[in-house]
Length: 199
Image (cartoon, rainbow, N blue to C red):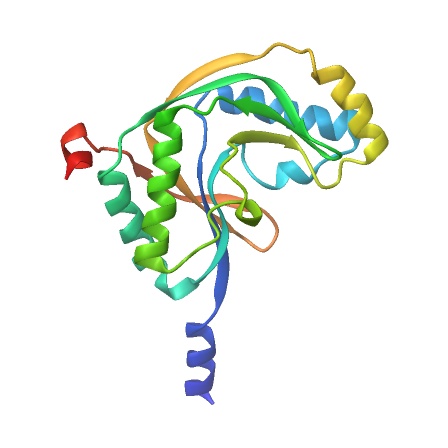
């Protein structure tokens, strides 16, 4: 019996994803906007995760092999450069999603593409982007539980709102689903140099 239990536990899978989590005060500003959507527009689903910019969509991984996953991410981070992230205004994916717009720069695009390639080759994971769509970085404020009438009202409010910020993303985060919410499990410092990228 014990052997059966051990082997079952050995195969327990959890959900993870990779993201950039902004530093203070941008983190708090984005979190306040999420709370605002909950209060005014009855949309609270985005509060199930910290403010973030997704680099790799959620995937399943055997929990007991987390060290292997962390080791791969640490190696990836050592070989990739920090990137400047620019936030500029608000945008949306009708009919439910409203987000802070992230400017696509060659550096950010390169970081995401490198991660996507690395995960395919080293970890055999192929779902970096949502439904195989092109990378579209954003910082979600409201999504699946934002009802269509509330989406219309909220988008009227946010479409012309101004918001600009920038920060240096010098680390990437591995997030893990607790069964109820997403939490930052571990950070990995981006420490690459232009020399390591040329190799």
